[in-house]
Amino acid sequence: MNSRERVSLSLNHQEPDRLPVDMGASAVTGMHVNTVYALRQALKLDSPGTPVKVVEPYQLLGEIKQDLIDVLGIDVVGLGAPKNLFGYRNEGWKPWVTPQGIPALVPQAFNTDPEPNGEVLMYPEGDKSVRPSGRLPQGGFYFDTIIRQDPIDDDHMNVEDNLEEFKPISDDDLAYLGSEAERLFTTTDKAILGNFGGTAFGDIALVPAPFLKHPKGIRDVAEWYMSTVSRRDYVYEIFERQCEIGLKNLRRVFDVVGNRVTAVFVTGTDFGTQNGPFISPKAYRSLFMPFHKQVNSWIHTNTQWKSFIHSCGSVRTLIPDFIEAGFDILNPVQTSAAQMAPEELKREYGKDITFWGGGVDTQRTLPFNTADDVRRDVSERIRTFGPGGGFIFNPIHNVQAQTPVENVLAMFETVRDLGRYPII
Image (cartoon, rainbow, N blue to C red; front, side, top):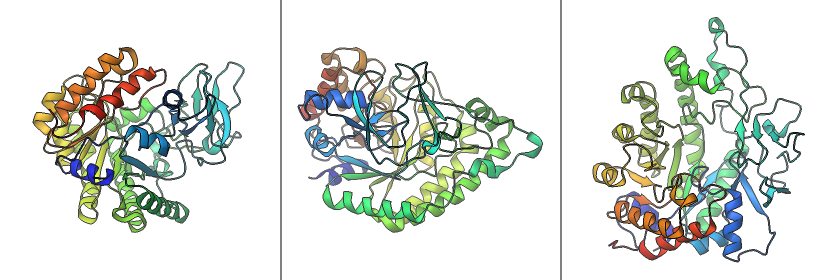
């Protein structure tokens, strides 16, 4: 059984030969570049000092190359537009050293010149003539967004200001996606996770628009969250327009990638916190569900793709609504949050939605406990989520910097040793 078949069976709640594994197919299922470097060194894939590409500059995620995919038994690869969250292309690689002293390669437009206080500022589209949109603190592990909020005049609000980044996909991007989809489909046997963008209504990572030189509209994080109540009609109209544009773009994307893609990342809007949901079911149904339903309905009517929602935190009370909205996949399955007990999630929702993630606790166990603790945690998750399919193994969100490499190895070794069906 190849990877594509393995993932497809599990997404359809059937048991393949072994658990499918994802690492690096999206910006929320990857690994920090420091940890990728340590892992490659431990596996003797590189000589000491060989740099690792930073393929997602905002979170400093490292490239999961084909040799690492092969060694770890990874079954999913990602397909996305060529520009990153800062609005420049991942190309023209140049050397850089992370604040922790790890050798890396970064895109040409990545600013590697530190400020006098040691922080590194990042600029939209790499243009230093405008205000920076990201800040890597001295000694930090990833960038913080710099809020660039102009004064808001409630008497002259313009929905177009929050639609600047939502526009028809370019012919160049379509050509790139079509070419990459064909390459990945024909040169690998991996399932492809599409990361096309344009349908993540209210994703707070995107609201401040670190990729825009002069963002207009509501771009402050706190202001946006308050606006979902205080300016609800305005936000609803933004979503209506975004959805219209997003659906047109999905149609054009499908024309070039077709059903080579297995699943598509629809939204990364977080609806949970550590201790409870960020939004009530009633508010979700009123403001977000109408647009999620439109997108998922189009996907299920016109493609064979599965629909992927990323939402951190405690979202148990919202899962029935996610299912009603048409989502096939829930990620990251933050079992360390309140009311997210793995056994209960699998029992109540395991036949209706695939759990993509939740394979190990990345808040405590993976970064701070022993390798034996990791093995126990991973084995419990396999026994809980694995039976009956509907489980793609991935940690809870990205593997962070300074995670002990022996713990990462223990995680993958346990999946290899215990992840074969039938799971005992």
